[in-house]
Image 1 (cartoon, rainbow, N blue to C red):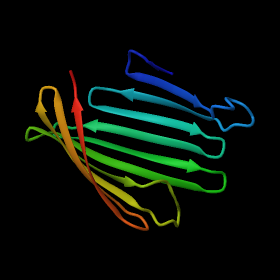
Image 2 (tube, rainbow, N blue to C red; image 1 turned 120 degrees about the vertical axis):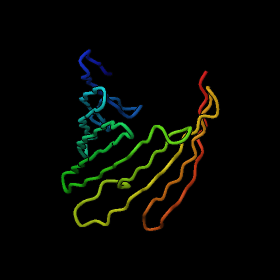
Image 3 (cartoon, one colour; image 1 turned 60 degrees about the horizontal axis):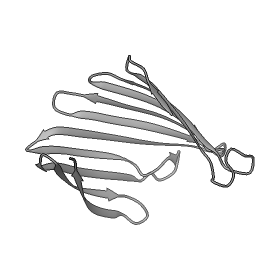
Image 4 (cartoon, one colour; image 1 turned 180 degrees about the horizontal axis):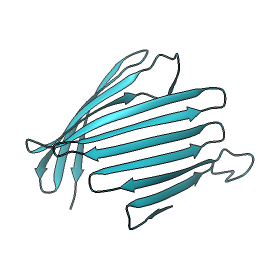
Length: 159
């Protein structure tokens, strides 16, 4: 559920349970809440969630400059025995040629102090073919015990 106030503030929350044990002692329940504020050129959100074995906090923000939009976020996970953090950062350039160009990087998960951190890097270009169709090719590189490189193409239609 969510509610957007007229002032730019919004609140959202949700609950998720296993299908055979909804909100019971036997099942694992997950709940979360988010508060956000959005203005013309920036926005910020704070979120909290709990899945009975870990709690998570996240802070995300975005700021639109004249030439690009910067987005960033951090997350903290507390499992009771360890704390781990992760982050992401991205830039969107809305007017590059006929389309838009996006780049980003972040951790592949949450990592505790002393852990080897792995990162993922991505780039994409959204090209409007016509008024109702956009093609977005993208590439990513994911670090890990075995590095991965991938390519994807997304086609969007609107009528």
